[in-house]
Image (cartoon, rainbow, N blue to C red):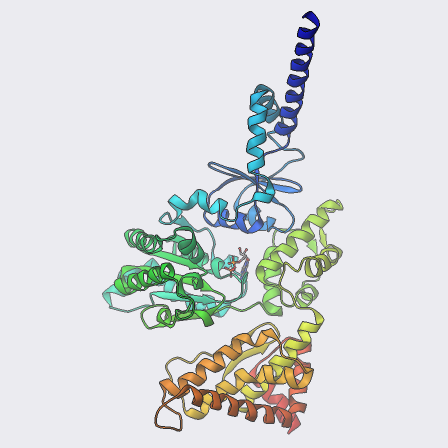
Length: 548
Ligand code: ADP
């Protein structure tokens, strides 16, 4: 009997000891939720972050209700530090307190903790998690942007374009009195990370007006069946607080071309958005800005007059712009860098990618105990950043060559036919948008040929076709359709799809023949591009004149 009790006691004691150890281990391991850099961005954009602590390898982030950690590598620490006082710790600040609490929460507490942790293993990370936290409030809660134009490097022409809108937001009364109409919607188009959101925030910051952020994917996916209602609420709130900016990120999630793959929820949301945009007069003081990296896929209804009728294309920065961006990011960092060389090395880097790069290099300098950033720090990380995970958009030598062949053909055809362009380059191309102009059939066909030139050249010169042609081909097709259907410039009495196809085939042949004839000129332009990255109409004409 007696011995039996002793055993029981021993088992109980061992059990308690085990639980104590378990509790300690669990309490000392931080049980904050692991999120990705993208999710951190969402939290920051929505201004939910209250405190950040850097304790490598993680950045610990607190919001009013939650605690998160993000792997410090691969996030833009500079951006975080710009916005929040960044505390740097050697050990987790709350480790001791947590340990104490852990001790108190022994026994059953430990088991309970165990269950909780299983639910929040990094593996089970739910993409929408941080979004959900804010879902209730953020739709209609604006933020005050602290970004200014001085924080936006390069893009001088774009900034000049937006100056009028800022003035309007500052003094809507002035415009109302004179009955001047301004665009209601500004569409920012360009690849990810080029600063579309950043720019919209800068406009809000410059004008000093509330900034209502909403992401298209968020509207449609998170609030299934409620998209339309949310859009309505969003606009109600914005009108109440006008002048204001409503910014819809990834608008393609809402405004994808209808047609294939009908989706009632999306359609209802899109219709609501169109109704809202038609519903307010331009004098109401609300400007809707939207961003997309797939303008080709947008429903044409969004682009009609009175909706997003101001379109701004933002491309990847060229060498000069990259230099300006690097300069901005390095403004407050002691360094001995050759910025010209660095700008040259980073072809294809978006501003977001450049910021990661600077950040990684700064961490590298810190690790080797230097107070100054040096070229070697960049050399050490650039390879890893570019080749490692290819998280950053950048061109390899081969891609540079492909682009050079592709864009040289485009520049050549544009110059030959006098199709206006600002510049054509390896990473950026700015064809001039013509909106209110009378164009002849010849002008229109020349434009289509410019779009076809790239894919033809890579096929002829490199013996292969590449995915970089997607946008140009889609545009060529759309423009050919306009020629036949909208402008009625076909041969037959009734426009038909067949006519579109045969027009495209004909233009394809003509362009191919012309490129074959002018191969030496194309080659010269290609060399210019490889050396200087961009070409403008004057330089292109110069090259042609020298050859013929
Ligand atoms: P997008 O909305 O086009 O995907 P973002 O606006 O989110 O890109 O830009 C990503 C980050 O890159 C911004 O948070 C900002 O720090 C930086 N950035 C982008 N463009 C610029 C710029 N022109 N000058 C300085 N920083 C920029």
